[in-house]
Length: 375
Image 1 (cartoon, rainbow, N blue to C red):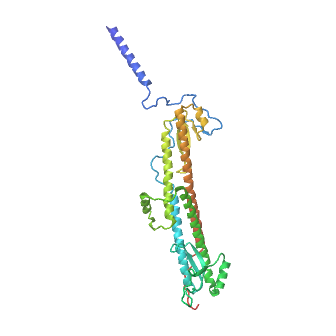
Image 2 (cartoon, rainbow, N blue to C red; image 1 turned 180 degrees about the horizontal axis):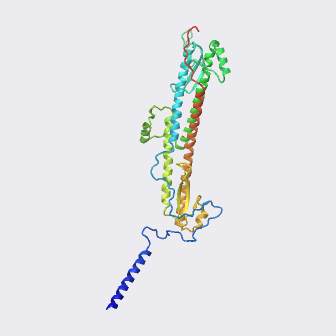
Image 3 (cartoon, rainbow, N blue to C red; image 1 turned 135 degrees about the vertical axis):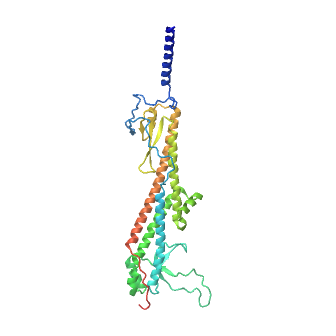
């Protein structure tokens, strides 16, 4: 009886040991079928010598430098919008100073034919350039017989070609202002500085707007854009600054869409034998592309066809990887182009603002010295 009991206990223990070994040999629930958790020894692939590769002996389950999937708080167009506002407000102040300089000249000089004129086109628009002009006598619209003369509108002034100080000295003499030569010449430096400053700002804003307009087309702001403009109190901003501000915001949104599309493309390649890995670039909005083999952990900067042929992939996986590579190439080209446009426009505006400020600082404003009759 004891022997039978001992045999039964031994059989039960054997069954328990067999069940424990089977449970240890089962495949984990979260592992993928047909994929090893660790690469087998000797499975590392040796790339061709002509292919640019990055060798990384670390295990394949390392943490990749994937960008944060949350919405980007800072936009690439923030700097461009700031430079646009700075140039627009500086240009507005230069235009107001042009009109003020003409009033200062008239109050500092006796009634004369040599005048400063702030020209703006169309009529009523802010001035664009300061001209030295010579006033002409008023032409009679009617003759002695009171018959209207069918001529065009009479011209009230003539624009003088003043390029240097010598030209202005000659204009002073021919207009009979030799006694007021020093007063007239005191306006030359500020006149030159305002014209030069306004030219720098206007050309920079025009070229930057053309670059943005060529890529985007005419700005069509929606309700969200208008709310954004009202938030930054752009109601007091006039001229080309508003259009550039809207286009810069739209270009920033396009860059963000490229970044989000690249992140979605990376997520799509997680189940493929060769996956896409996005590495941080030189700036916050740049990305570097790498391709990693899931089993070996080997990475390539450029995914070539001969590299895929050595992996012996199935036709379905090969077609999927090639499609992802083509889409990634298009997204990276679009991202690089848009970043180049934004940074080029930003640098152009920053340079114009810096040079315009330097020109204005070199010439001090002219003080208003009222003219005394009889002097």
